[in-house]
Image 1: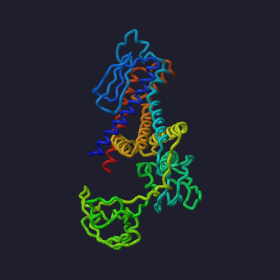
Image 2: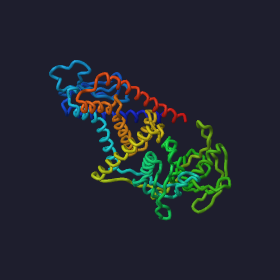
Image 3: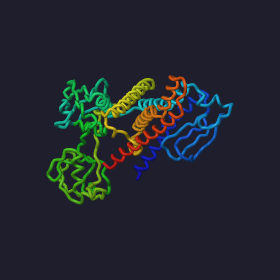
Image 4: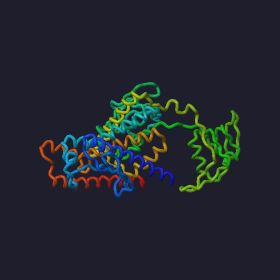
Length: 456
């Protein structure tokens, strides 16, 4: 329940912030160009709070449905406008001014992404290096010549400092050509060139980017924790059976224990049993009976002994990298990251239309809420990255040439500039109906994808 509430809170906070940024772009440029703003609202539906303020009065409101927002401008199409206010009506502005107001919302989303990445880089980001842990036999990765222990130095023409950099670059190459050229550094220090070849199966491999590595046959590097006991619970069976902090599990029921993960699985499968273990304590091997406690879970009864694992201080020393720059350098890094994410997003959208990338990657509110909750719990850097990615997506979505969105309205203004007169009301009405239908179709598909992920 806590995770659900945390996801909902983080989702509402994130979406409210990003919508406010988007609408403030429209608001700010409209005011700068002398257009009268009537209302600035976050959310849709009936307002739950509103206030009129300012020397040029504007109604500020928060509505009940937190899935968007709007800025209402003085507009002759929505009713009579006093003669004195006609020069301040949106409809009386030149097409170039109207385009500036409409484009300001998405532009502010991109600026917000740059600001989020700047703050992320200036505070520092610790991330996993692009290390290959294992390669599955008979996989695309194995056929390309990748090996366990390789470090991915670059993908295509993109240098890859982190595993996330590598994944984004792989996705971009898959979307564009279906072939992924890589430069890797082997454990022996040898630099090699390899190429993953997907070609006609691109859509299948991009169906769920969350499992992209496993589909390619790559298991990212994971630490192997030695089976050394730490943090004993006073009421756990490990303490009552005689285990002490620092003990290393050597044998369990006569079988060698090589790592903590296999030890945990051994314990989970034996609830309520007493097993013989051999431990190494200060270079002395000691045999003792270990009682395994019982815990009820949704999956049934599992074993638990009330002990944690000791994590060596240098475990991640060679496997992580810290991306941190000064205030000036962070600006360049943030702009580059925003451009990279924007280009990958646009490429994926285009390739979805051509069928080269699976449309199952379109996410709706449920998946976004889950991601919001997870990243909020993971720390500031993760949440800032999430905000930046969603802000970029929001900016790009609103620039699509769909009549109900900013991009569609910009298209009308461009048409007016070309033909010398406004687009007819009938054309705009038909465009709105088509736009509503497309948005409903998109939202329905996104919800379908979300539900499919939950149940499947």
